[in-house]
Amino acid sequence: MKSYNWGIIGPGKIAHYFANDLKLVSPPQKITAVLSDREKSLNDFAGEFAVKKRFLNLDDFVHQSKVDIAYIATPHTLHYEAIKACLKNKIAVLCEKPIVLNREQFLEIQQLSKTNQTFLMEGMWIRFLPDIKKLLEFVSEKRIGNIMSLKASISFKAPCDDDNRYYDPEKGGGSLLDLGVYCVFLSTLVLGKPSLVKAVGNLSGKNIDEASAILLSHDDGSYAMLESSLQIKHNRPAEIFGTDGVIRLLDPWFEKSPGIEIEMDKGKKDTIFFTWEGHGLQFEIEEVVQCVSQQKTESGLMPHALSKMILEITDEIRDQVGVFYPEYE
Ligand SMILES: NC(=O)c1ccc[n+]([C@@H]2O[C@H](COP(=O)([O-])OP(=O)(O)OC[C@H]3O[C@@H](n4cnc5c(N)ncnc54)[C@H](OP(=O)(O)O)[C@@H]3O)[C@@H](O)[C@H]2O)c1
Image (cartoon, rainbow, N blue to C red; front, top):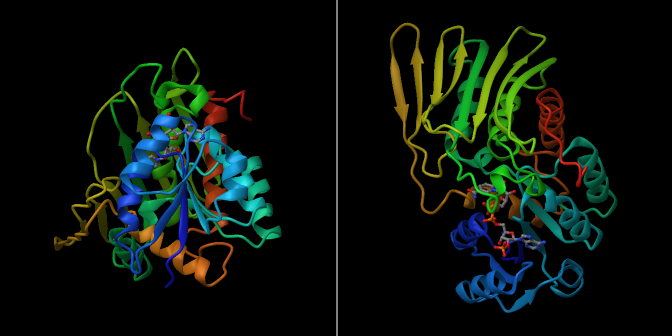
């Protein structure tokens, strides 16, 4: 694998974890440019990670930074413009989830990736974790028989003030796009495309979903029950039920997974533990580096079709719950 020059767009919370995990990849990857909208965050990040090229403007970043790969970690509503600018300038893109706001925006960036023969991937980091790999192995080996249903929920008591992105429609706020996308991702990964989507939610005064409850059903009779919330705190496993047993991802959204459990109806129970250094973002970084060095435009593990399917589902959920981002869609 090669050591690439990375540019960071949006040096906030997750970008700090990402910058640290870049050092864990072999060979270590270099951050050579950073872009922010505010001088203070730009200089703080550049100082901490010894980044030479600093930009306050997207246009200058794409034309002058000479980076090979951009990692985009701005608030969701800004992903679309940043992705387009990078792809048009043949800068490979790893963009945080949700990659863009809706299917229509996705079709446009997918086409740009194709036309410019430039790599594009959604940073659905859990896709690359060892416990998800183990889950897929168990499912394909039919270790719990035929998969019948999946239960997943994710919640976090978000600070309810105008300064944070969770409640701010300008920043693509709401529990679904911030948290629920992980549950939708897990369901599509295991059960595929649903034939029916049903959702209800609680809307804030600014029309973002403080909580969403979702049912997905499939032609083969399998279904998923999903939930996201900014109002409660809980720590539940994600559970995948089969005709012969259940698989539990014990804390599926946490950066240090406590493992995966498989329990057979006949009583046998095993837990498999995984440990790793850092935040766990190095696994997605390795995939990007490998794909870019092989001149691919998409990853086989987190392909464009999967990101598109997730957005088709979140579009439908937002329609039913009543969440819109009028400034950006
Ligand atoms: N936090 C997590 O654990 C996590 C996990 C996975 C994915 N994500 C995703 O990552 C994205 C960012 O989340 P976060 O929690 O890291 O948010 P955050 O801490 O608010 O960071 C966002 C960063 O983007 C910068 N920014 C804002 N507008 C910009 C612009 N026009 N151009 C360039 N930079 C700009 C902000 O600068 P200022 O600081 O100056 O405002 C800030 O540094 C979201 O899409 C989220 O879904 C986050």
